View (cartoon, one colour):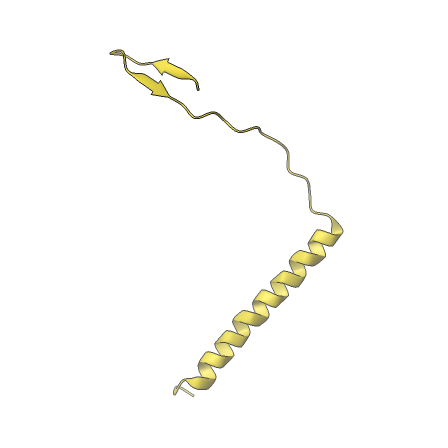
Length: 59
């Protein structure tokens, strides 16, 4: 751990920094998976809203 001495003799402890790396772009298979998961999520939200309106007394 890197320590530094500040004025007055106080020690300051800094966290170690993680390694930096460049992210790789998603593959075509990952893109298809993201699209599929987005559609499933949208269907779940739409279904939940539909159920909420159908059981409420608003309509």
